[in-house]
Amino acid sequence: MPGRLQHKSALITGAGSGIGLESSILFAQEGANVLLVDVNIANAEKAAALVQERFPNIKAIPYKADVSKEAEVEAAVATAVKEFGRLDVMFNNAGIMHPEDDNALNTEERIWDLTMNINLKGVWFGCKHAIKAMRENPTDAAKGLQTGGSIINTASFVAIMGAATPQLAYTASKGAVLAMTRELAMVHAREGIRLNSLCPGPLKTPLLMDFLNTDEKKQRRLVHLPMGRFGEAVELANAALFRKPATSITSTQLTSDKHHTVASSESSYITGTDFKVDGGLSSAYVTAL
Ligand code: NAD
Image 1 (cartoon, protein in one colour):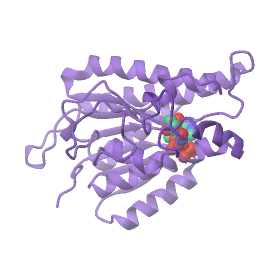
Image 2: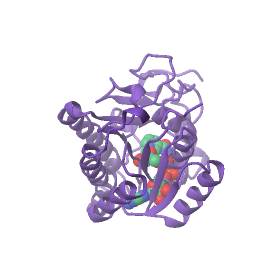
Image 3: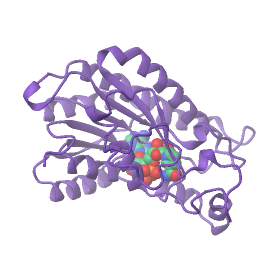
C-alpha cells in the first residue's frame, strides 16, 4: 500500500532524539524522504542510519544545523530541495529547556536569549525558508504532488497553562510559537501552505527527564497528569503524522477518528490549530489519585 507521504519530502529539526527521531521513522515509513537536522550531528547520523536501514526505498539524510542560525537553516532547506526535488513537510521541532531557566527574578538574560534564539527564532527561520521553498514546489498530478506544503511547529502545553515550577523563558518562547504559527497560517492559507502547532504534554524524553532529575521532581508533575504517566515521543510522532488518535490525544480540537496526517494533504482543511496532545492535562482541574 502506498504510504501517506509517498513521493513527498520532509525536513525534521531535532531529529536526533525524542519526538524528532520518532517522527523521522514514521514519516519514512509513510514513504517520505527525510532530511534529519540536528545540532548534534552524531545523533542525527545514528538516527538517519536507523531510518535508512529500516526503509531502504526512501532517502534519509543527516544534516548538521543550529536552528538559531539563519544561514544554517537556509542551507538545510536548500539541501532538502536539492536532494529530494521539493519540500512538502517542515517540522520545526528542535527545542531546549535550560536547567538554569527559572522565574522572573532568577533567570539570567543569557538564558532567556539562548532559549528564545533556539525555541522561537529558530522556528521563525524554519518557517521563513520552508515557505519560500514550498512556493516553488513543482506540481505533478500523477503523483498527487502540489505546490505548497505543511509546516508543523512544536510548542508545548506550557504555552497555554501556567506552572508554579517555573521555566520562564521556555514558557514564553512556546507561547510565542503558538501566536506566530496562527498568524503565519492566516497569511499563507491562500498559497496552499498550512501551519499548525503541536502542543505536547510532559514526555519521557531526554529534554524533560534530564530536567526532572529526582523522583520528587517527577512526582510533583505526575500528580497533575490525568493518565498518571508521562507521554512517549512516539505518541507525538503519531500526532504529527496524525496516523490515528493515540491514547494520549484527549483534548484535541480535531475530532475525526479517521486516519489522517497533519503532515500530508489528508489534513487539507486543518490550519492554524494548537494541536494539544497532552494526555488531557490542559482539560484537568482535579485528577484521580
Ligand atoms: P529531545 O531533547 O529529546 O530532542 C531535542 C533535539 O533537538 C535534540 O536532538 C537536540 O540536539 C536538538 N536541538 C537542540 N538545540 C538545537 C539547535 N539549536 N539546533 C538544532 N537542533 C537542536 O527533546 P524532545 O522532548 O523530543 O523535544 C522536542 C520538542 O518538543 C522541543 O521543541 C520541546 O520543547 C518540545 N516539548 C517537549 C516536551 C517534553 O516533555 N519532552 C513537552 C512539550 C514540548
